[in-house]
Every structure is written in structure tokens, then in C-alpha cells.
Amino acid sequence: QKEVEQDPGPLSVPEGAIVSLNCTYSNSAFQYFMWYRQYSRKGPELLMYTYSSGNKEDGRFTAQVDKSSKYISLFIRDSQPSDSATYLCAPGAYNFNKFYFGSGTKLNVKP
Amino acid sequence: EAQVTQNPRYLITVTGKKLTVTCSQNMNHEYMSWYRQDPGLGLRQIYYSMNVEVTDKGDVPEGYKVSRKEKRNFPLILESPSPNQTSLYFCASSSGVGQPQHFGDGTRLSIL
Image (cartoon, rainbow over all chains, first blue to last red):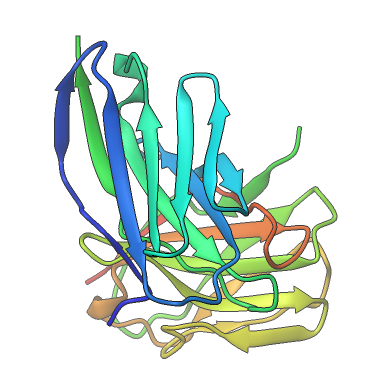
């Protein structure tokens, strides 16, 4: 079983839509949860970082963590064409030396 | 500007010809790592380094070598490249485990 599972998409939505991106993980020791955004021909960049269950909001982006079901989500409100990218979830633990990533969900926001 | 710099960005080479991909960061980060990214498989960690002279295997270390002689540099060495190492490679650095990573823009390797 993979440590982190993520639907690869692609997910295509019209501009202005609410987008929901999801991951599940298997390791109950995970303590922090990151989301990275990766544009084509670029490296991933940090988008959101949270370490507790519940919601964390930053502008149009909301990260949601449910540790009891090992389920993490990223919501994008009022999606824009500039949000078109691949989104990678990255849960982990502070006492782990390694980083873990989901395989990424490709999002296309159509004008 | 804080950045991770990888070179080369693109390389086409042949089986068995040793190559090195360089990685340098200017953030004084202790933790550095190499990943390969393949369709459907996502980012997989090859090697990581917790500090100078301290390196360890990630999930897919076979066929790769690394060294960390200076804090800022973390080269990836393919001593005898094979076609199954054709991939997109990323170097990343962070201030420590559990901290957000800064990624380079990637190196696309094609091994013929």
C-alpha cells in the first residue's frame, strides 16, 4: 500500500468553479500536511502547510485535514486559469527523515 | 533571491556514460534531497542529506550516488546510466525535516 494516494486527474473545471483536491494516507504517525503546486516545466512550490486537524484558510485556498479518516483536501474557491497546475499533497512526520508525496492531481481551469 | 539551482536543465546521453547533475542552494539549508518524477508515480526520493557528510538512501537509490562535501552543494551522480533512469529530476532543500522544501526547476534526463 502506498503511503499517500492521490487521484491523478486530470480535472477540468470552468473559471470561477470551486475545486476540491483530495488525498488519503496510510501512516497514522503523520503530523504535518503540505500542499505543493507545480506549474509545467517548473519545480513544486509550497502552497499550504498545516499540522492539525480542521481547516486552514489562505486567500482562495483552504486546506482541510481529517486525521481520524486519514483524509486531506485542498479547496480552491473562484478558480482562475492561473490555478492550472499539478497539485501534490505531502504529509509527513517530524521524526521521519524522509518526505512523502502524492502522485499529484493535474488541474485545468478553462477561461 | 532564495533559490535552488540545478544544471543541466536538459541532457540527452547514452547508456553507460557517467554523468553528474549539480545542485546548489543559497539558503544555508541543512537538508537536501534528490527526487525523480515519473508519470503516474509522482515524486520519489532518491537520496537525502541531513547535513555535510551525512547522506542516506531514499526510496529509489539504485544506480545513483550522491555526496555532500559542502553545505550548499549536493550533486547527483549516475556512474553507468541506463534507459530506465530517463526521468525528470528535482533537487530540493529545506531548513530541516518537516519544513517546507524549496525545489529547483528540474533536470530532464534522457538515456538512450
